[in-house]
Length: 452
Image 1 (cartoon, helix red, strand yellow):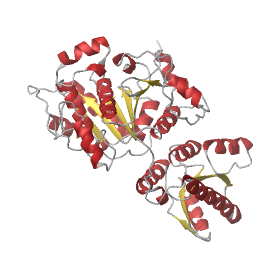
Image 2: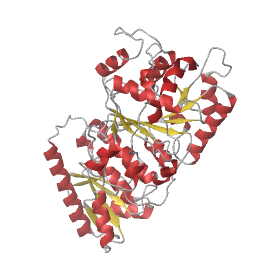
Image 3: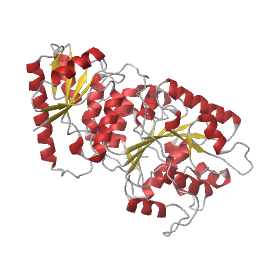
Image 4: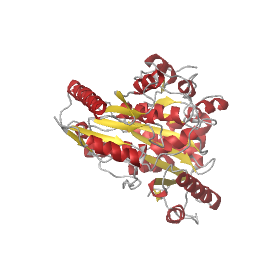
């Protein structure tokens, strides 16, 4: 059996030496080395999109890979692509702590640097046999769907008060109404209002997961609120200072685990760029930025997009812009905003109709917004444009999702367009890191009752 090997090494000399050695292995089909963690994850996701059998049996991760540290990268690959055997290459193989940390992260072996032919052959063969056994145990046929899991959508505001949380909540409600298993995460860590908008009080939050190295199903069960609307909620901490406990590493681990268990993960990132929400924006399949059509806010949107680009979080052309509070009297048109910010503006603007929102906002019952509301119809239509209402390549699901839009009948009539917005995947991994410990993987998500 031919063993497909995908190496990832940030050091050019190490990559050349590793390629030469891999070329000598019998029955091996090594790919060209990948230069960084972002390229590795993107390549695996692209291969998995067709079938799990398209994935390589073995992935080799060099200790100097970047920008995501090697152990964090191994953990993410193990969570998103469990049928792949990952092997770490390190110069510190004599340290028991490193071996233990590598195994805890999901590595199937550890190779010393510089690697010898015998050790490389043995570790690759062991990892390949493990991978083959996992795939046989899963019993997945060649045409079974694979992939990295659910879709991650982030919603951020150009500045405070533009309606980012309202947009995130309505996106999640629209997806749940369309039959998609959806989780809404409040990553506005110091000023999160998702709970207030949905009339939810819960004693646990995402901060309770940040300091736990190995999150058991029981611990996770205590952190999740299962709302009567059909949404699973992971809320921001009630004490804003606890938001400092959630760093970029914790955010990555939590969101990676969520995307493996939900069809759609909607994350409200607020308006401030922190290490945690920047990491989530970088790894998101779709990043949405909300603005209003006024000079100050459009300048803030441009400033946010440029900051994301400088930090290598997200390119402007990979960002979807939603224009909120638009009216026919507005001088700044969505097309002008698109030109100024270089983003992709959603075709449907959200009208300025706060009178429709005020009763449900004041009552903290955004889920009770009337289906005839122009704001709700516009936001649900934008969700359809972004592809949030149906699984990819699912025409039947797309038709059912369009029928679920408020004010839309089964024949497809109603407000809004529903044309898809082509939003590409994330760019290079951000370099917003803080020091912090490891985080464990998450277990299943049981249903929870409400707590007062």
